[in-house]
Image (cartoon, rainbow, N blue to C red):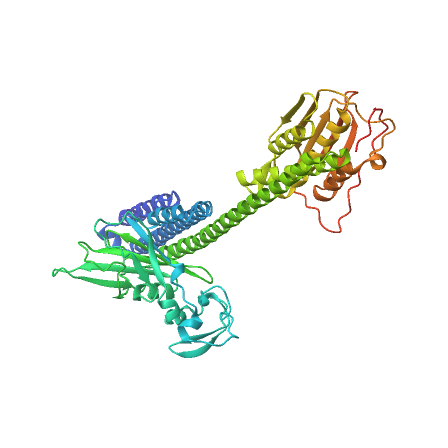
Length: 564
């Protein structure tokens, strides 16, 4: 019984240790093992516990694999999130810069930190080096889409009949990517030059060629490569030379320690390097155009993963689109400047011609004593000078817009000087905001103010030695309001604008209705003269066939004089 009792006690102790181990497992400690001695291993129960420990070890191995997988997935998600953030920042920054030189500097500053590069260089295609493919090949195929095209970049045109190696071949591909290899072997594209535009942060002493050609081995290789990313590793040797290898395969996340495949290649810069280093060539290519080459330099050897290459390809693609947009912006600015110069010259010549015509009218006015003829000449003289004033303002300011306050002040004062020469003192007050109006509306507004001023002087102040004309400019809710008033006699009794208007008011109504697409009213100025109110939208065009805006019919007003 004692022997049995001793054996039972050992078994009880063994199971007690197993129970304690199970408690540790349930508590999360998968590395626990049930302690065994040599005597335990000789028993059946000991062998069971030994299997129990093996099961614990398997659980521990699976748990470690699971934890490693979770950590790897977390790292992958964090890296992808960082990559997306980088691309978002690149897109946001590059889309906000329209000038080419600052944009190129920004591209280098953004792309370099992506791979911890020391700096980079960008060469852009020289537009002046383009040749017409028909001139290079002596082609007379007028049916070819690029034959009569103004754009010399035939490689971006679909359906061309290309002459690669002297043999004509139809090219129906719709994108540059599908035919770039053939185009790069054509002398039309291979002889295109690339000029150095920006270089920043590279290792001191690095040689940066001022000019490249798309036919050069490096340019041709990186442009034709898919993705357009070329990773080159340069190793110096003991004899002062160097060996250059292109990375043909990318590191894998599953096998990070496995060395990639390297094949002989060409470096961005041909000079010897003091230490092993890596350089990356990126083609700046959009769907239909080759814009240039970017090279990033590292002062060490770094083997790239697939994710890093994909990120660089996206950065290069965004950069190429930004460069293309900047070039289009620069072209548009250049053309806008040319148009503005031509418009300035046109306004200057129109102003001179109008002033010459006004001078002739002034000579006729001085030599004629017939009151009716003098009145007609004076009316036409003010109209000519009003239009000339607008063109003078447009030669001094932006040709696209002009200050309404400046027009009002100059036109009203000019008419007062010409028309009221024999009258007493005439005060002109212009108030309100300085509103800009499109140049196409400026002449119509000047003529309206001219006619209103002439009307006030002739009929409002004909029996007075002095008077006051006021022009108030207001703007709001996309509309412009011009309030023209005088302190003259006012309107005659029972006056109706639609019925009693003369030539001057008829001109005013037609201009406001047809050119300004606005409204016009004429009414007493609280018993102290007359007030005209004009409202129009400065961006609205008056299209042919559009319903005309009829003049309002004011209520009856009592005054002493009839307007002309």
